Every structure is written in C-alpha cells, then in structure tokens.
Amino acid sequence: MKSGDHAAIDVPAESSAAVKGKAPLIASQREEKRGLNRGFGIADFLLRLGAIISTIAAAATMGTSDETLPLFTQFFQFEASFDDLPTFLYFVIAMALVGGYLLLSLPFSIVTIVRPIAVAPRLLLFILDTVTLTFATAASGAAAAIVYLAETGNPNTNWLAICDQFEDFCLKVSGAVVASFVTVVVFVVLVILSGFALKRQ
Image (tube, rainbow, N blue to C red; front, side, top):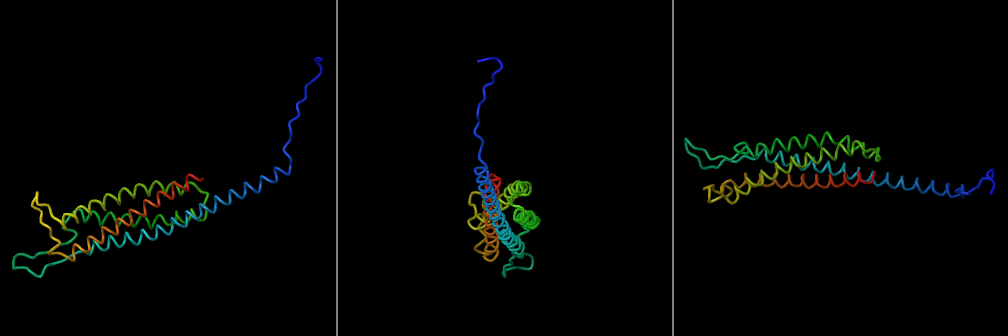
C-alpha cells in the first residue's frame, strides 16, 4: 500500500425510516410516564383531602372532650377535660398544625397534576410529608399511651383507670386517637407515592 493511499471504513448509516420509527416510540414512552405521574398526582390530591378530614376530626373531637360527673360536693367537682393533660393539649396543637400544612400543600399537589413531569414540587412535598409524618406519629403515639392508661390504669404506680367513670370522655379521646392514626397511614401512603413518582422522573 502506498503512503498516499487511505483506507476507507464504511459505517452503515441509520436509515431515515429507523429514525422515524424511534421518534413515535420515545414520544409514546414520554406520554405514558406523563400519564402515570398525573395519576400519582390525582391520588396525592385526593389523599390529602381525606387526611384533612381525619385531622380536623381528630383535633375537634379531642378539643371538645370534656365530661363532668353528676356526683359532686360543695368543695369537689369531678371533671375530666383534654386540657387537664399536657399530652392531649399537645395532640390538639399538633393536629391543628398538621391540618394547616395539609391545606397549604394542596396547591403544590395541584401543580403535580398540571405539570406531572415537574420534580421540584414533588420533591418538596416528599420532604415536608416525611417531616409531618414524624410529627403526627409522635403526637398520636403519645396520646394513645395516655388513653391506654385511662382505660387500664397502672397498679405499679397507683394510677387508677378513669374510663369506668368518665365513659364519654374516654370515648371521645379514643376516637380522636383513631382518627389521628388514619392521618398517619395516609401520610405513609403519600410518602410512598411521592417516592415512586420521583423514581420515575
């Protein structure tokens, strides 16, 4: 071979038909991802509405739990109220804050429906939902412990069960705790949904 000769290597060019065939496939995959993320966004919005209802129910029920026994004397009156226990007061404040956060998060949830490919609002909701989940779980767990003591008492510490006397009070606080745990479960689902949606971005 002479020095002036050049070796030519033929690289098969991709046909225009193959390129045109790939374009609809990519567009179809993009639309499929967009539709699935929009479905995640709609589910997220509906779950937040449900969580708002359960959170308001928990805070309102606990905040109105008050019972006075008909047996009282001139100097003593037997009464049970949620603000007698700091744990129940903390529970009401915590549920009110969680409900406020859920209301404020609705516009961001709507953005994930309108713009299903947007990462920033979904990531923000994922982080804030995780923090709020921890907050709600702490409040619900603390209140559940007090309700358990009110139901069963503790002989080792001479704590008497009061639910035999204050039945309506215990019924209300128990219902409030159940509603708060419904909120906690909804938050767990919200975090999982956001995680799946972010993974598919």
